[in-house]
Structure formats: structure tokens, C-alpha cells
Length: 252
Image (cartoon, rainbow, N blue to C red):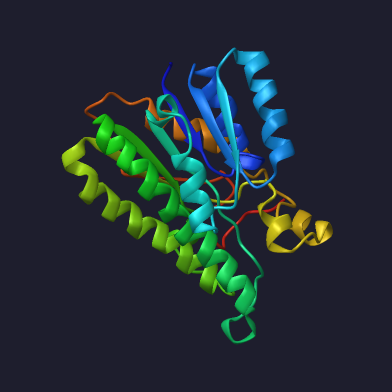
């Protein structure tokens, strides 16, 4: 087989864009996400367009036992993963801490931290056995700064940064690279999910400036992965030109 990339949250946004970029670069792909119909459609499209092999696995990274079982049940030839892109993640709500929803908090913690850990534990063991690998963790500008009403989401993305640093130390003897990528405003389903389907409110997030696209972030990830074997990029923060930090955006 060719090199293999495993991408979580591949049904839309940055994950889907990564699938296209890595297929273009001749990687075979393991695509995971919750929406099986989208996974199957994307797999067919990538196979037809790039002539790569694509395996799909529909599951929710929050479900530990299901995540472990589905990944471990993959055929051995698919466990020679070269690149893991921990992209599955979300934000729920935008409330001050005293008004926050327990359910929203648990969804973010279970997806952004625990889900990332469940997938990483399985795949990092494959990489240790294979003697190499590269783990890309999708953080956020929210993992570099805390902004008003971002409390728990920001905390989960700060955790992604800390976990990336910890993974890099632990996996160093095994030649496994770890990179954290922290995007600013990216126009994907992110805001629609945060505001629970409120399209008008989600659209306002991107009014008056050019946000990043999912492809911009996917190409940044590819840049990190495509460095020579002796080079690791520990972390990258990528922003729209119109955005200076988490809360400062110049809108025309």
C-alpha cells in the first residue's frame, strides 16, 4: 500500500479538505466520522478522482469502546498509519460560565479531549510498532488565548496544546512527530454547530472579512507533514489576514 493517513471528523470542513489534499499527495486514507452517508460519498469521490484506496469507519469518538473496537478491527495492512489527523472537534454554546450548559460542556470535553485521546492511544501504538509516524492535533486560537464566554471550549483547546506537548515527549524515543495546528476563524460548519443550527447567527461570525477556508488549513497541515524526516514543526498558528488575535478582526 501507499502511505496511509487516518483522518477523524472527515465528513465536512477541515477533515474533508485534508482528505482531498492527502489523496492528491497519493496517500491511501482511513476516514472516520459520525455520518456514514457522507463518508461513503467522499470515499467514492476520492477513489474516482485520485485513484487511492479509501477505508471508512463511522463512529463517534466520544464512545470509547466503540472507537477502540472499530479501529482495532481494521485489517492489519491498514494499521501501518503514517499520519494521524485528530480533527474531530466542536464548540457548543457561547455563554458565561454561570449560564453554561452541563450538556454542552460534556460534549466538548468528551469530543475535543477524551475522543482525541481514545483515537491517539490506539493509533500511537500502531506507530510505535511501525517505528515511525506523525500525529497532527487540531487546536485553535482558542487554545492560545481565552476570550469572553469561550471558557470551556477554550479550556479544551488549551488541553489539546498541552497534550500535544506531552505526546511529543512520550513518543520521542519512537521517532514519532507531533504537531499542533491552531487556526483562527475558518468558515466551516463550526459556527453553525456552536449556535445549534442558527444559520443567521453563524453567518454573522464571518461578515465583513475573508476568513480562512478549510483548504487553507489542510494545506498548512500538509506543509507540516511534508517536511524532511529530521524536521518537526511543533506547532503552527494560522490566521486570516484580517484577524490579529482571538477577538480582534478588522471588518469592512
